[in-house]
Image 1: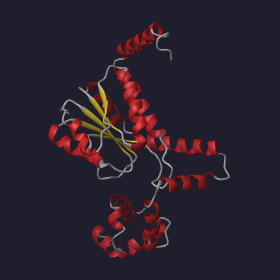
Image 2: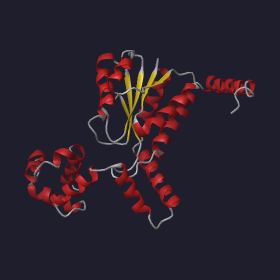
Image 3: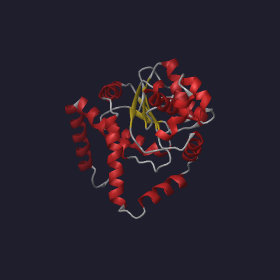
Image 4: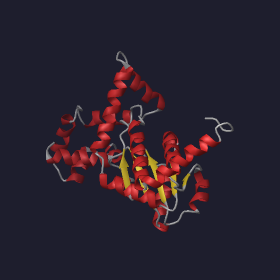
Length: 267
């Protein structure tokens, strides 16, 4: 892209809803570029004009579980499903690694390993990821709690947050009101937050202490959990390696308990 095109693309990513309510002249004034540059931009990125861009974006934003599944079904129709999904999954993993920050990952491992208590807010489709994280990390002797309450009942849990705690927030596509309340309350108490998200550009990303990206697909697509699961499992292994000998010993104790109570509690 030319410098002006890149400037346009960055502005649209950060202000999409505002752009959809703007005129080309207003965009031109906001970016201090000519209206001719704005008008030429749409065709360079695959649209007939600004009107066509608005129509297509509104269609993509007006999504539902049914439309996302239908889009995916239409895409794979006539193809081998497993091969197609394997290709898509590899693309999500590759995109996740392209935007991977070792510094952010290592800082997350350090925060979770040394936290007094780890709270996990994993609403909706991310619930399974929160359960996986809690189940595996509890084996290492870490103190974890999944935040299951919504609405004003969340405040019952916030009451017990301390500055030595860490809150892991799953924010896919957007942050729900409960997640935003946690981020706001952080400013008062001083606990740390780790955001796991599928967004690269969003207002809420910089509100957390650390943000980790995991690709799940476009807004109008069936959202895959392959990359977020990959990220969570890497965190689990890395945290386990922080006190390797001690954690291996804990797992050996678990094996001994299984043998001891195999008859009473068969697997």
